[in-house]
Image (cartoon, rainbow, N blue to C red; front, top):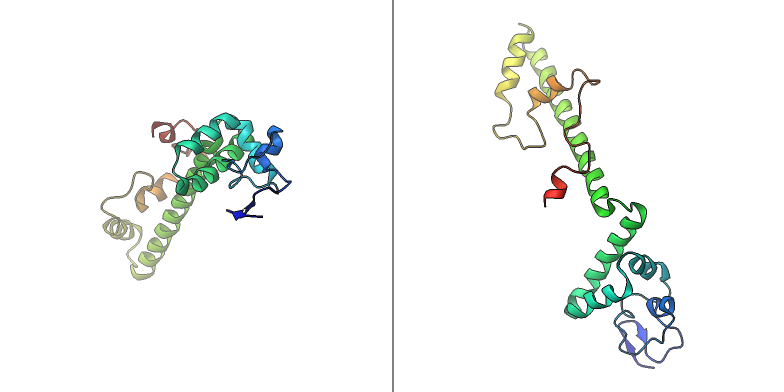
Length: 176
């Protein structure tokens, strides 16, 4: 038997796509290199979300060297859509972005606390000089998602009234 891309031509076992679609798996089957028979769920989720015809069309339109990456992307997107039918990948991205924002805030608070503790250690005059010295050490151009250390620590003093600026999916992720 001839081997090509991990597929044995003339083998009795069709690829996962042809098996699910209940059709004969031809030697030049566009699905076979990317949806092996031993991974049936991979094609099942892609088929459920995108449809076999659309997947076939997408693969045919791409150069062969890009097809594997396209299939990986479709599988990821399809699995995300199956888990979260409303937001799919955007829901996962938004959740991760919120985690990043939270961790950046926690980091800024920890850094501000370290600066504050150092100022108290080296400055016996009291709070006023510590705050003034802290403000000097702030970054000149803080990013949009990370506030400067002083403002982060002031904002977070009252944890119950602080509202995250991007609690919904709708924020900047839809504008891309």
